[in-house]
Each structure stands twice: as C-alpha cells, then as structure tokens.
Length: 387
Image 1 (spheres, one colour):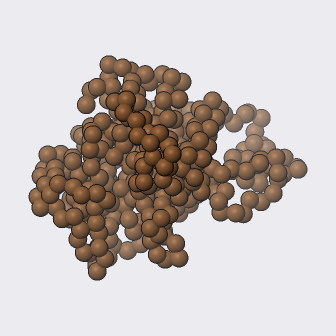
Image 2: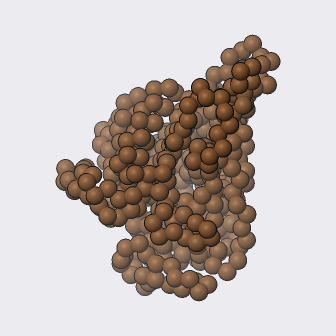
Image 3: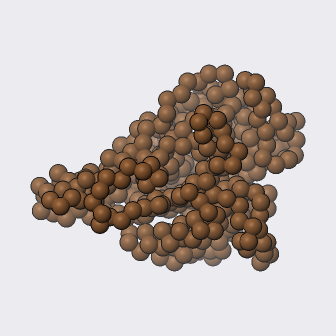
C-alpha cells in the first residue's frame, strides 16, 4: 500500500520503499498471481462454509524457501490509503502469534527420533484417556487404544501419547530440537509485519503441554519453516518473497538428520492415508499429500475458550520427495451441519458436529491442492500409493 506520494505505508511497498525509490531495477517477487487467486477463492469458500472469523494460507517451496502464495483474510481495499488498525486485518501468517495445537506433535516425534529416545515402532503401553498435570486435566479428543506405537501416536494425534514421548525425550533434548527450528525467535523476513512469539518459562508441565502444542506460541510462518526443514531432508531454509534470493549455491546447515526427515515424512503420509488418521480429506489422488492437523482453543481473557478455536493443517507434497508446503489456518470455524463431506472412497456424509481441523481446515487444504496441483505439475499417479 502506498500514499499519494507513492511512498510505501504498509506491506511490501513499505518494506522495500527505500530499495524501490533508489534502484532502477524492478523488484521480482516469488508470489504467483494465479496461485494467489485460486487459494484466495478457496479460502473465501471455506470461510462461507465454516462461518469463520478469518483464514490464511501459505504455499512455499521447501528447498528454496520461496513463497508462491501468501493470503490472509479478511483483507482490505488497497485503493483506500488509510491505516488499517482493526486487528482482524493483520497478516495472520506473518504477524499472528498463536497456540497451534497438535501440529507440534510432529516436533515431539522428531525430538524422540533425533535423541534416539524412540523408534517409530516403540510401543507406549497403558495410555490413559486423561491425566492430571499441575492440577489441570489433559484428555484425549476421542477414545483411543491403551497401547500405541510412536507412529500411531502421531497418526491418531494422541495427546497423552505425545506427553509420554516428551517425557521420554526430556526437557533438554526437546528444547534443543525446538530451538534448532527457531520456533520461538522473531523470524528474519522481508515484511515489517512480523510477529514475535510470546516468552514463556520451562516450568512444571511445560514439557507436557508443549508436546501437543499448548501453552507455547509461534507464528504460522515459523511453523511453516519448521515443517519445511523436516520435509526437505533436514536442511535449514529461510522463507522469502523474493524470486531467486536463495539461488546462490551454499553449504546447507543440517538441522535434523535425513533419517529423521524420511521417517517423519512417512508418518505424515499415514496421517492422510490411514483410516484412523486425522487428515483423510487431504487424500487427493495423484498428489501424494502428507501432513498434520492442529486444533487449538483460543485464549480469551486469560481462559481457554471451549468454542473458539484456531484450526491448522500443514501439508507437504508430493511426500516421496517433498517440494511444496501448504499451510492453511481457519480462525474460529464452526461446524457445518449442511455441508456434504466427500471421502476418497466415494462415501458421502452430510454434516458433522466435530469442530476440529480434520473436519474443516483439511477440507479447505485438500480443495486447494486439487486446484493448484496441475499448475505445480505434481500429478504423479504411480507415486501416490508409495506409503
């Protein structure tokens, strides 16, 4: 957004104002107008179906860090040159700071694998349906088997299972993994509208609640960066909206091992493919999607709301050799009693009362992937049954 003197007052124009006024060379962005349009339209559709307060999506190449689309809704009329102060208009991807829920379980599994505390087939026995930590009850979202492998804990999104893994990993190793992914530092990014995760202390039960993404905050942009690192073989990347910014060959910093990356990618695929997984609606034939859901209660006046939620889905595709990351977030979605859910098997279900990411955000993400897939040329029917 610019003012009457063509000076940037917000967004890209403000961030690059000096460069644009001093340089004769055009600034080439990595953003793709076609992808941006498609994703925005699908978000609007999702907003209408699930009656959200707002939504956001990010599409990024996970090797280069180049962002192909960044949409945050509701947006505003760029032709009205006024300060946009209503927080509803903030850039939810870069500026929004949230507790994001079970998407953090992926990091819990990664910490376990990196520290060699667990293997994918490590069995955790006698998992309770509810435990008390620091005087507060922590429960499962649905009734789960008492015995689960580490992989099943991620696929079925077990809160208690994630806690047990984190306890086995320990605070030191878990903090090391989260810090290496830079989830709690202010990210270095071209836009000025960047949020800073809220500070917190590792006190009693912090390890337990952090294991399933509660009590700690970050921005969706930082979440996307962390998932990109896990998906691309474990190498550090730096998200950017500039084309070819990171094209210069350089030694890549290894954040997690290739072995851990491959194991986690396989698990993320099963979150989508497995009938007991939480992201079945992202199973779009030919696009080999893997991902993880997160359903988090919003904090309203210091108290967790039972109704207001931030529902997130982070996906990687094609998962046999991930190239793209799509993050979709819905702000305060509601259940859709009249919506017809279509399963990959052909079965249809009208209406669903559960207001979790698997029943709304994943639906929107799946529709987006189906629409942008041909443009990204990722359609690989033979690979879709790899896992």
